[in-house]
Image 1 (cartoon, helix red, strand yellow):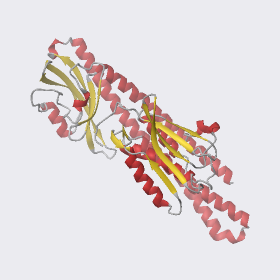
Image 2 (image 1 turned 90 degrees about the vertical axis):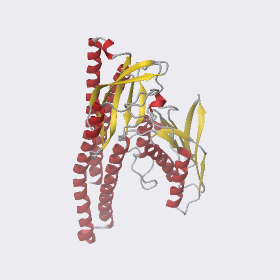
Image 3 (image 1 turned 135 degrees about the vertical axis):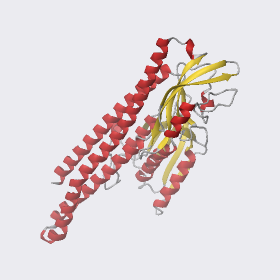
Image 4 (image 1 turned 45 degrees about the horizontal axis):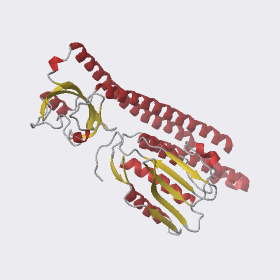
Length: 408
C-alpha cells in the first residue's frame, strides 16, 4: 500500500516538474528571441526602477560610437549620456510616468560633444510586481544621428513595427510567467488535498485502532503518514524552487566571501555538538543577483555540512581557481561523497544518492543551484569519490550582460 501511494504521488510530482520545466523552457525561448530582436534593432535597451533611473542596460547592434553603456547606469532613462544640456522628460513621457502607462517612439534630441545633434526614439512598457505594484519600466532606444525627417518613411515604419512586436513579446513573457506561477500553486493545492486525507486517516487508524494492530501493522501506518509528510515537503520545495529561480535578475556586485561566512555561522549554530572547520577565502566577489547567489551558497554549503556529519572533524572550504582565465569557485568537503558514475543525475529534481534516514532532504537543492547558475550564464559540476568527500565547482560570467551596478 505504501509503495503504491508513493508511486502515485511521485508520478504526480514528476508530471508537475516536467510541465513547469516545459513552461520555463518556452519562456526562455521567448526571452531569447526577444533579446535577439532587441539587439538587432536598437541602439540600446534598458530597465529602469520606479524612480526612472536605469538599473540595467545592454547595447544593441546599432550602438552609436558615442555610447558608453556604463554611463547609462543610474541615469534617468530619458536622458542621453554625454548630453551637453540639462534634459527634462518630454511631455509624453512625463504623462506616461505619472500614470504608469506605456509610450512608443517619443523623440529625444540632445547635443553631444564631438557628435553634434543626435535624435533617439524611446519606447517602453511599465513593469509591475506580482502584487500589482509599479516597479519601473523596460524599454528600447532607437534612432540615429541627425533629424528624424531624414529617415525614409519605410524604415521609420519598420522600426515602429519592431517596437510594437517587442513590447507585445515583453507583455506575453510577463503574462506567461504569472500563468506558470498560478498553475504551479493550483496543482500543488490539488495534490495537497488527498495528501491531507491520507495523513488524517493514518492518524485516525493509529489513534482509534492502533491497539488492534500488531507492531508490523502500526509500522506500516506510520510509514504511510511519513510518506505523506515527505510528499508535502517535496511540494513545498518544488514551489520554492519555481518561485526563486523564476524571479527576474537584479544584478549587482556580490561579496560571496561575506555571504559564505554568514552562512557558515548559521550552520555552526544549527548543531553545536559537531566539530566543523570552515575555510573561506576572503574577498571573493562576482556580479549577480545577491538573493539567488546567496541561495547557491546556502545549498552548496548546506549540503557540505549535511554530508560531512559523520566525519570526526568536518572540513568545508569555499575558494576559487583561475582556469583558462576564468574564475571557478568551489565548495569542498570531506564528507560521504558519491559515485561519479551517477553524476549526470546529480542536478535532477528529487534525485538522491543516500537514504532519507541517513541524510534527510528533498532532492531539490542542487537542481535549484543549477537553474540559478544557468540563469546567470554560468554552470556547475562536481567531482567526488565515495567516502572521500565532494567538490562542487561553479562559474559566473566575469561581466554578465545583465550587470546593473558595481556597488559591493
